[in-house]
Length: 151
Image (cartoon, rainbow, N blue to C red; front, side, top):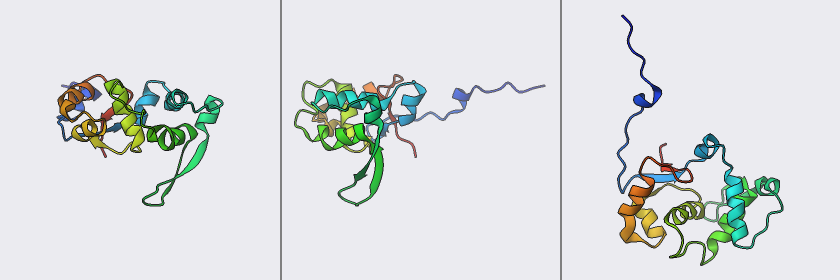
């Protein structure tokens, strides 16, 4: 007698999502969806008047120095511009930003460091909407690669 095989999804452990679950932008999601995060960030740059000549120009790697630790990392030019120029503007995240845009931009602004739902709500200036944020990015649908963080 043979044992029925278990589909790959059934073998994954269920993770209960709470207000304290850390989230991040999962870069692998962009690849799985055959989408280009650099193109998306280039479009964000253009919204703030920063012109990157081409997609190839947006993807060029540059050095980014962490002001606190002095650590040097290699990042795309688009990400560098979003992080150092766009994210410093007062109008990067506004009261009129859609919830998904505000959350995504919050991750870009903080270097994609994992944030809990509560921290995200504070970061976008909507601490009373933590439960709405939880329902939005904690559900089955994945928006712009925002997923629970796992080490």
